[in-house]
Length: 435
Image 1: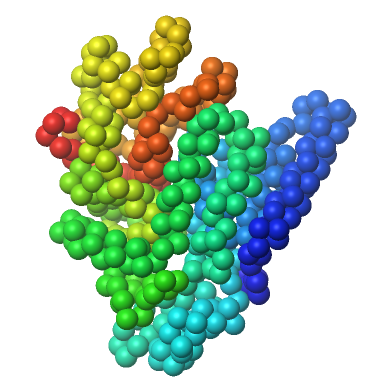
Image 2 (image 1 turned 60 degrees about the horizontal axis):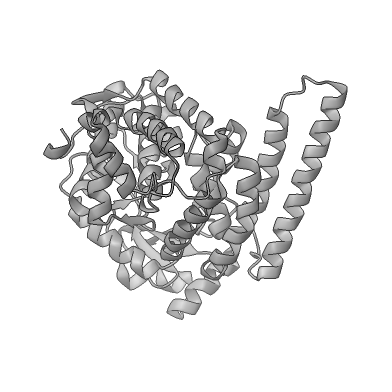
């Protein structure tokens, strides 16, 4: 993959890139509708494909929060046409890498030494490149080390990038503007945290230690002496990302073991630690032949307020759906409905969100769940499609749902999708009060 010798870092440079991309998208629409004049049956898939390629090409050069938002949207399979999913998912671990001279400069700026002075060996080419940083493989004595290096200018461009991303999201994904504003506000705070590698190092060590007892999962050791504001060093872990792992044709027993490890890892974080690795995309998991799972990258961690936790998971309880009074109280507490809503609006939102929580809570309603059930996921995608086309939701002046739900929903969507790809049949452990 071609390396980048520089990343546009100024607001003007980055805005210009968006404008250029917007012009390309406009051209794609003109081309599509010109074809439709000649052939009214021209499918929209070609338009999606052209737009997805142009947007990904632009965002992957910009790196940072622009690419991260695309990566996050790719995880919400019900939100995007498949062309966008496939392109944007590449940002999870195969974006164009930064050139080696910029890597050397980053290390020199922080440690006052070049890679060859710090390590016995250091790969000139990035092994993985994502939205916020890229990883190089190094060695020191008998240790193999992964060195994650943040791209220049990422932290400074978060706020301005999100303003530039917003029109694309509104136009392409048919989102409610008030909800998107809330979404962007929460995303901004998380992205700023992701650029703080000192914070990530501390969380990585704390959560790894707190989850070390979970069967089937393991974590790298971190090296503070080779880490800093823009650099994190940890043990190198060999393993396969999900797609590569599935290409080895593993047994269902092994896939179920990995699925169980994933579920137990998230169960412990959410219900016991009240903070969670909120970035469950395939690039953050390294799967082993024996069914164990290496877990990396604690840049995106969502801390869960106690009052939100209680209200949110109360909705998951199967009995609550049938208790109208308690359900309505929970919807008020989570800002799903408001006192200012008309009775017609309240009835609509209660009906819609009751259907949503019944569907998303289904794995919690039994002792085990078979995530190979594609019919279940089709129900989720169909519901998402229906909601995105509901005029009442799109035009609502209020954001529906607590801002804290954004990353928790994203975490469970990501987890469910991983388990579906694994076709995993697992025990759905849960707290006693949820049973």
